[in-house]
Length: 182
Ligand code: HEC
Image: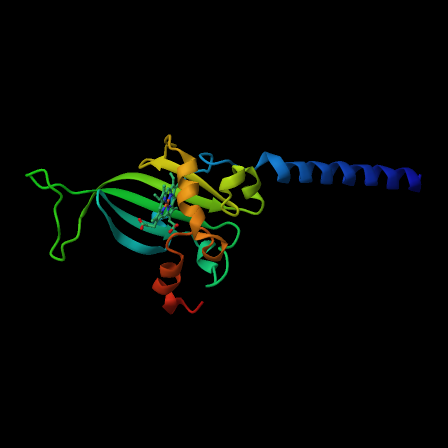
């Protein structure tokens, strides 16, 4: 009787860990374009804002998990980085308006770019374009996935390398929040 119970228990544990492992290894690993929209990103700490581009103004956010990063290390699992991309405001003459300091001013938000990492996610990434465990997704302003060429995201972030964890503004990220005691 005792034996039967032990065998049954071993069997149940075996099935359980099999299901657990197979789920962890395949089921929940997103590919580029499959991240869920971080709809509360505007509440995330903002670490750079008003970045000036020829045709856009950009704000960067990091979620609370990402905020735990330490300089010189990769961002932790669960990090979400968000880049909100705005169209610059146009004046009545059709040219972009500038503020007193000569900067473009935000108009409507155009799209939202996201990178998120979890342990092991990188294994689904294209072979020569692995960016650690980061996965990329692009959304419209209201959070609908938009069609982009994800190879471009990856090839432009790839040169930052592991030392910057493929994050373009890695250094500024740590400078900007220098006062936070990390
Ligand atoms: C041509 C190069 C280039 C491409 C292509 C590109 N990025 Fe970036 N990305 C940048 C730069 C540069 C920054 C820093 C902000 C700035 O200076 O505009 C950035 C910043 C980001 C950030 C904020 C974290 C960071 O790295 O500083 C996210 C998130 C992001 N990009 C996602 C994406 C996604 C998603 C795509 C593809 C849809 C993409 N990027 C394509 C150059 C690129």
